Length: 301
Image (cartoon, rainbow, N blue to C red; front, side, top):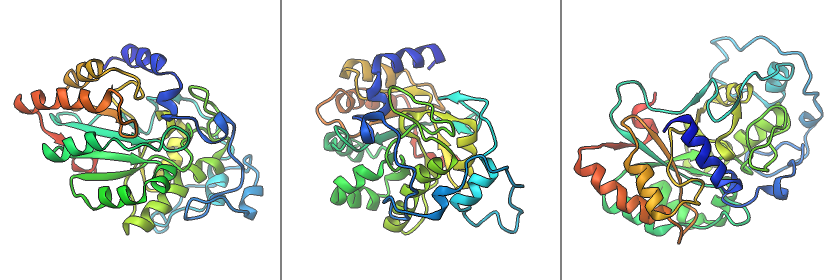
């Protein structure tokens, strides 16, 4: 999808692309306290570390495999000003590798007020047609749907991705998107990414590979933090359901027109909306035409 078309759909979607419901506090900044490995907020001396601490050298090869701490990341990036902001910034993957003819369907579950639904019709269709997908799940959605999470996590057709702890745009300066305040510094970027990453690792028994921020907005420094935490920041090529606001006919049109190599973003937490019937209408034709569908990890190393 051309950038102008993506921007148009984002504008139409408004705050729903951002949240499938509002973020904590209705867009207000989240508390400064860091999150624990389970994703819960807690007091820590690390939260008092200044975001302006001068950056330190990048880790050596001998220590690169160890996840950096919150304090280490603040020291590394606290004095770095971002140069880019949006849905297409350095360090964010928005399409599959060059020459790849498959399409990656990705579905977000944003969690929180208005965002904890589960579109069983959508998932049942993907299973019926053996269509793989990457599911980006927010920590709050997981808490609200523990049994469904277990079923999805156990299904080899699906790959689980990290959709953040409280679903915030990823910024080191607090920039907002669609009325949702972004993370206010490097420490809050860490909380948003690592809080749910640790939660997912504990539930799955292994770390997840991909992260998508709330609203799919990043700055380039925040994207570097994601990479340092061992995950790949994911964007999208095609906005398949306009933040769960498009009609079934519009969803069908967007997905049917997805080019080879596209990453399609839709939502799996709005049963009764246009997403499921639109996917059901679009995918069979693509399959009949020889289109292959993949999880992100199938083609991204």
